[in-house]
Image (tube, rainbow, N blue to C red; front, side, top):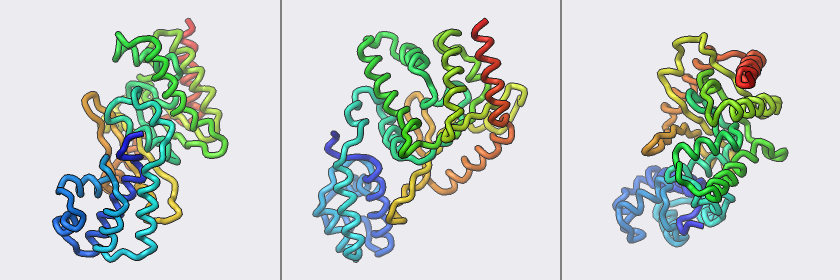
Length: 293
């Protein structure tokens, strides 16, 4: 486990610390002096970045900000939560830089909304489809290492089948992603058959924007994933929605309410161009049959 702890409770703690400081009218400089840390350290604490979190620092800041005993106890509990490990910590060597935050957010989300234009949504990919993508990006990777990546990938997908706490996944896929033969026709036939199977699950919805839709709203937006999180027993600690976009040299996380609102509207616009679930299944089945020819 990283000495800087888990991301989600760090983000919750950082948001609370910043809100407390602003509400109290205490300057960042005064707060830094109170715990004898530099400008960068306080910024990392308040933005949930990787940083060592000392309970005494948090307790001191709460006192400076005039926080109640109850709120102080909540924040100290968050410090303890950062020390807990999730399954993904054992697979740090298989998770690319900048993607580890997404994996942790995904593991704690209650719902994912995914719009994809070139590749199928990650959690709906088969092992063979994922292997083909890994080989393209890392053609010299040893077979044993590839299989370790696949093992981590299976752990991510397992939440879709968790009967106690199933992840809700609503996906819209451009038809062009269904027709891109990643791994070849045989892999794609199995991949689309897998899509047809998983879409019978009540927690998974897949809709397709057909090529017949021609130009539509999603082409101006690009692929993205929106994550919604469960309500925390302490309402202010509920993690706000996050919009994630994957890039070749770096990933983007959008959290400002106005940014999230715009993507929710974009998703609603995209849905208007998508087939309903039954017609989407029919199109997926048709393309799967074409891969069999």
